Length: 199
Image (cartoon, rainbow, N blue to C red; front, side, top):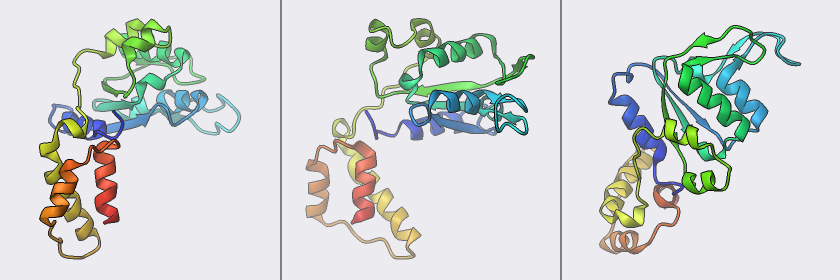
């Protein structure tokens, strides 16, 4: 679900791996139009399009020897799915406007709140890309299914926000703790964080 902390998990996997000393680069696949995502991922050569006055490496190259986190991978268009699959298979990329491919060594972590198997059945997500990305699946349950995490997370956020304001950390009353634990948190950890910040 949205807001459960998929990005936190991606960072944890990266930090605790042999690639942890290299970069983790993130891209929200649903935040940019297809033309921008392609140039962001693959980079481009000088003169590849109007305004490309210099060559620019893409996120694949920026994440070389590290991790590329593709958030909301279910939002990729079919054309970009094909290009991503090619990079996953060959470990080579072609910048926009280039004629020579470049080698990349990247771990991919992909996340989505969509049902990719349903998208495959509907013809909206490539089955071969799904199986290529699906080496290991980690399911992050919603906060309502892990209520024991609510209070520790609330205290962690409370400490961080108080510290950023230069204030001492206030205590959470018993009533506040009960209310936090009783609520279903449809917005998950993101909602809890915002509530604590607002409070």
